[in-house]
Image (cartoon, rainbow over all chains, first blue to last red; front, side, top):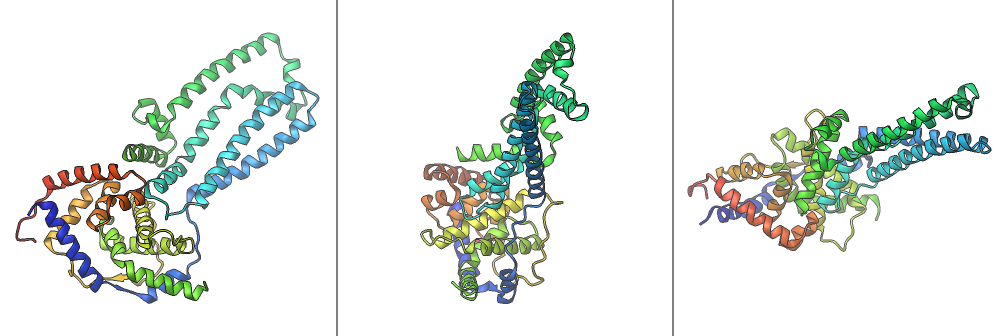
Length: 219
Length: 168
């Protein structure tokens, strides 16, 4: 008899024994059944809820800023850049919250584990979206000067200074694109990605590893 | 369905599929306390999902999905975050000591724990007699993929097996 056959037989014998020997405690089962069906996802639920609340507040504020500065193209463009960014963060937060709250453990194993992994990678999503604002950092300066000093910095700024900001924006755009590409779960073996992902915390690092493992497994 | 009837159906379902819960919990835990916690977590997750059970699926397939998803998630958590849920002081499933812990079964458990968590799920279902299509349905991979993986797992386990003929 080969080893696998032996294992299969022993397992089948165990099944018969288990059916007879295991007893279910009705009392303990009633206690479980009395529990409220709370969805507990701990930290991720808090992070995503906080992100959605902050994102909605920021988007609303920027929308208000745009409406009140509709006549000024500089303010309009700066406000639109920040609004698009905060909108992306908010939508991402809503998507992750929805995934968490509708997670169904009776779906196929690979599908549920992939969803859980994506929830675990929400920090990485926020980091990638945050990078997108780098080339538009000047939008914050424009909006900041308008809000705090009531000055349109583009109109009052020196031409050379404005040109240097444009050059910086291009450099930041290149950096943002590079980091955005590096910060992908597919690149976890690259040294730069290792450092960046570990900077997001061990959970993000493990989630990225898990996602790769799942992708390989489902092939 | 009234909540009382729902509780009764749930109890009946647990009684029918207690073996699946127990085997999965034993294969994904490393001590008695963990096993007890995992059985509680699986039971709680089954209870949460019970109202959404779609009768067009076989109940045992549904139980495998929920139980394996809970067990794999349990294994994925690190020790610090592993929630010690105190639902009840009582054990949900009680097994007389050593009723199934033959040397051969201990060896099988040791071998199962050498497999990664997805291969382990796959091989438990294979040992339980599920066909390739059913295993594919629980995991969401193709039946041919299941067949390939089972062959590989068997090859690997065959080389790792250290049981002798006296164990059977």
